[in-house]
Image (cartoon, rainbow, N blue to C red; front, side, top):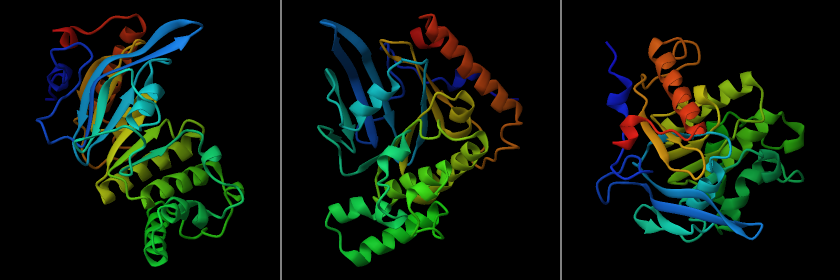
Length: 289
């Protein structure tokens, strides 16, 4: 008999808080994060008092209603945007700008690739900018291309590849960088369903192989349940953590069998229900205790 959903909900006493780990054990910590924009001469609170931790090597998915501040949160975590209040810690160090230990893969992969550079050159570029020696660059690029299944097209240009293959190039570039934390902002939103399924399995394979900590932002509920060890559900704006849900599916997953499990259906139904509640501004009883 499967445990009740609520037994796997991690909620802190403070509103907006997800799972918090013991001091010194988190790879990524978001603490009391708040972001306020100035729009048309008035302040707009996008993110409010948001707290959660990710342990080393964890794959967590972040979902929420449209306009709930997912991308704003990711920009604050990655150091691309300064929070109004609160802080982000990477391996205990405060994030004040884009950290060297972190890589980001965006939804608009086409804009992140240089069309005049070949696949290999695109993947190599961040390492070259670091001043890394060529033998080491070559090794890391070879490994990254192999990991994402692109070792057969290193001399192709991005515009010669399909959308799914272009996204693999963007992922390979992030992997070659050897980050401790990989942030992904709806990276599969622009590809077809079959390619999306292939890329989901690719991410899980790369994550297992490298042991990197992954925070994966998606609007797709099924994807969040299939990919993640946890799903962090955000409220509507101003954003807090509505629920921090453990995904107790088997560690080994595949598109056919995993999605056919009754537990998968239960979990996706629960996440969908919470997002619908979030749209109406309601918070679940478990998260408000």
